[in-house]
Image (tube, rainbow, N blue to C red; front, side):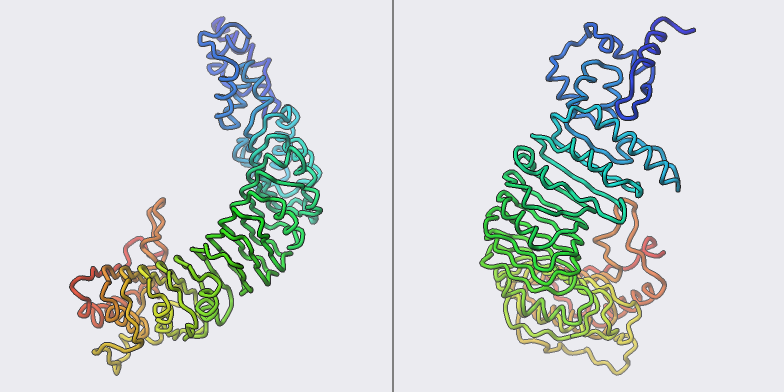
Length: 508
């Protein structure tokens, strides 16, 4: 039958409910016995003020907080004001149903319903709902949760929806008006639509706005932004109804703008005076940053454009004249020699990533234009992600003469100290570019030639490198021969040459 203490604990266990599932408590008898005094409302050996217990409870993950509410009346009272509702399949401990997504969805809805019904709606500071992989939920189900969650005093709201139905959930913007909206500091919406944004009112505390796969027009968004003066960071991803993105001048604190893969976007027109970082990707768009002389960092990825390098070197110096850090990621480039009409007078760090240009004989020497346009440059990184077998390999060119320094440009790079090339190959123009840099750079301290896919970005957590197939390993061998034959003998004594070759963890 067990000891009296065990029976007492089991009796309490049968009388309590799990605040997540609504079922009988799943807490162990040992857990309940440990707090049986508190559960019965008698004096605990350690008596803490209720506000301290609430603070302790608020720091627990949601599953631990629910278990504590199973065994303690004090924590059960606190549960109704629990401030951090993090709702996902993982956080709620829902078991793996395999391919039975309908059963998983029913379980998820049941648990969230029980949590929201037993919460007072008061005291919520952080609400995060992620329904993946529950793909058969009705938008009305989400709506009743959202109506409870957005209460006065909430600071962080994160709603990530995955394939609810053919019609996206229409977020009720009216909930963002008045006292409820004025306390929100971070708003993240994914997989829904935004309409009637003028109902949102003034978002006086909002500093971070993140919209992912949200149906919203540029005009609607402009209205919302105009009432969000405190914004510091805006991230838009895959918002395909925006054609013209306008950032109002009222956003005096905005320093970070990210616009990624918005397919219909044609123009970014920002008048935020203190913008310092711009990140954009997709097709080429017209960019105007007004008088934002504070822009210091740009990440620019241009997909499927034949003249992206030319656009970058001719337009970006005019768009951001005080740029210091520039990341360029280019796909399918065919134009080899961009002409520098402007100068990156303050650029110190330049990283160019080239992915599979249409021409296998891409002329790497065209990149010298970027070096010529950047007199203050200190670090230059070039990453190659091209077809692995080079048809212009200098190793196989028996008539090639690289015994004399080439005069590809008259400019000297007086501040350049660190150069790294990953995906280094045996192309003749790659060797010529490297020799040119060594000859024209008296300040060079470190030259890293990496014949792998990027040893500096290997998967440290799983102790793996970026994988290389058989052809890539063959090309790496040719690149090593080219380095020995044409580069090593020219390296100045003061320069630290690092040659990185594939290891056993680079192959598939």
